Length: 151
Image (cartoon, rainbow, N blue to C red; front, side, top):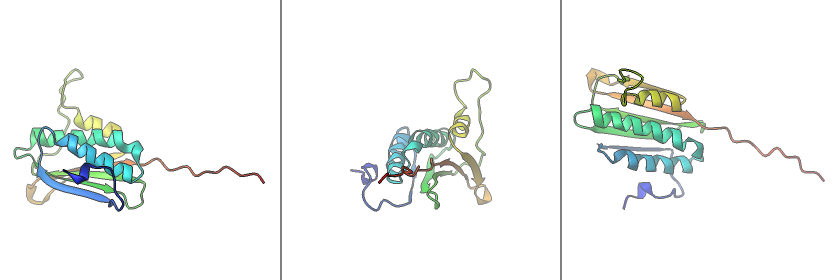
């Protein structure tokens, strides 16, 4: 049984990372882990956009990286106001949209990532050994209870 996919337990940290070969079902498992962490970090409003963006980045590794090896890192921002996900693979080619026209069925993954996240980008690894593609989502500030109690 994979304990990382269970409901949050006390002491769930501010980051989760793993390195493995991605396959057809990897995105589903990683989405579940990301949701678990976002719930523990009290950022449930980020579940939909963050899991969608993560799915697109994982799909890009599966489609475009010959060995499908990747490292995935999910982090709560130190200020507690959002989160960041990084996917590092061994393919040195920069990420790019491959849609050839408006009616194409594929190639829009990065357009989706751009639409649902606050920021995204990529960093090449040294000596053309791969790249890290990342995105960040900002949490909605918690509203304080400003009701004035009458005496």
